[in-house]
Length: 146
Image 1 (cartoon, helix red, strand yellow):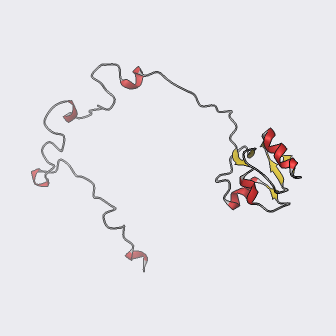
Image 2: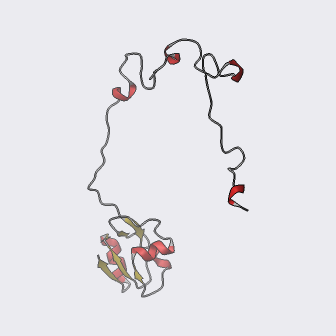
Image 3: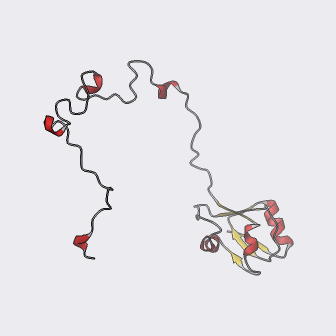
C-alpha cells in the first residue's frame, strides 16, 4: 500500500450541500428554506427565540454549583488489594499498572475499608478511612500517608 492509495472508508464522507445553484440541482430557487416566513429570511436566528415569550432556559431556576476546591481521589477498597502478594508496596502507580485503578487523579489515592484483607501490605496513599487503616494494620501491614 502506498500513501497515494489511501482513501476514506466507503460512505464515511459526504460532499457539501450546494444550495441556490439553479433549479436543475433540486436545491435552487428557495435554497431548501421552504416558502416565506421567518425561517426563510436571511439572517434568521430562530434557535431559542420563542416569539417574545420568556425563553424556557430563562424560566427554569438555576441549580447546583461547581466546587473548584473539592479534592478528587482515585478510590480503591481493601478487597481489591487482596489479589496482591504479601509484602508488596502498594502505590497508586502500581494499582494503575495492574488495572485496579482506571485513572490517577490529581489528589492521589484514597483507600476505603470495604471487604476483607488477609495479605500483609505496605500501602502508600494520600488518605485512608479509619476502617481501612484498622484492617491493614490488623493483618500486620503498614500505612503511609503521602
